[in-house]
Image 1 (cartoon, rainbow, N blue to C red):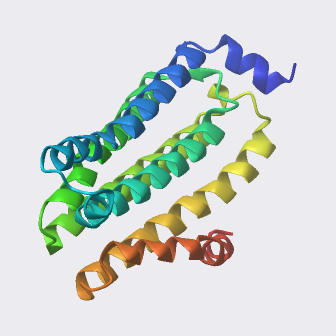
Image 2: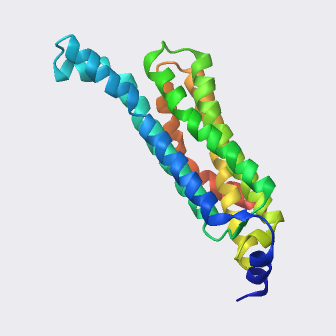
Amino acid sequence: MSEDAGTASAAPGLNAERTKAFVDAVVAIAMTLLILPLMDSVNDSAARNHTTAEWLIAERDQLQSFLISFVLIAMFWMLHHRLFVSVVRVSAALFWITVGWMLTIVWMPVVTALTGQVDDDPLQKAIYIGSLIATTGILLATRIHLLRRPELHSSARADLRVGMSIDVSIDVSMIVLFALALVIAIAVPAIGYLALFVMFLTGVVQRGVSRLLR
């Protein structure tokens, strides 16, 4: 065992495996809750004798919101999972940062239902995309905390610093692109939440941010 790993194992803190399991459960529940508005709409359509085509047309906005949010939560979970793979201890500060991150995830089904069922307006877009910025921002705060507290990690200090530096540039790139998507969604209402497709540029922006950080 490396010196860093031994230090981490001896460091006081909360059990990392239970924290990871807690996060996984919260994310799974949030992803499941996304489907509830659609389930309710199926019951309503059945009561009104709507056809499948009529249901699809009537719920197209809710379906779009569901798919976008489902993919985004899955992406956030993957990033958080990668971040916590080598965490062996959870400090009190790290726990509360993680609780803040989970709060933004649990909030997603609410704003998803809002975007699918309430008439579109700039405030709605600000709340939805702002929530995505908050989730990414807290993930960035988690990385910075772990970078400053290597005793919580089993990774060697050099490997941790290199890996975290790369991931920090990804988080910063995502925040920049989410902010850009918000501006586009508000400035061009016809595009709406499709502006989130700018996230496909994450790799390009990340390379530029990485060079700036170096």
